[in-house]
Length: 61
Image (cartoon, rainbow, N blue to C red):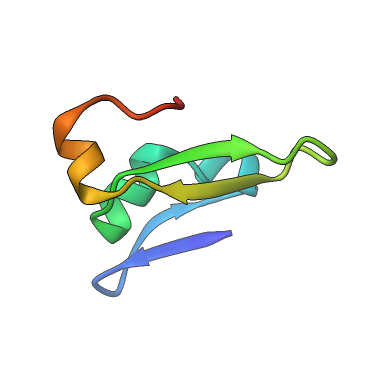
C-alpha cells in the first residue's frame, strides 16, 4: 500500500504496517481509529467525528 501527500511518498508497505492512526492523521488530516477485521485481521479505519476528537480521547487506539 502506498500513501501520497502533496505528491510525495508518505508511507508504503503492507497494510498492517502502514494503515494506522498516525498515517491517516498525517496524510489526510483527520482523526481516525484503526481496528483489525475480526475475520482476517485486515486493518480498517473509523473516522472520529471532529467534535469527539476535540472533546475527548477516541474509543480505540
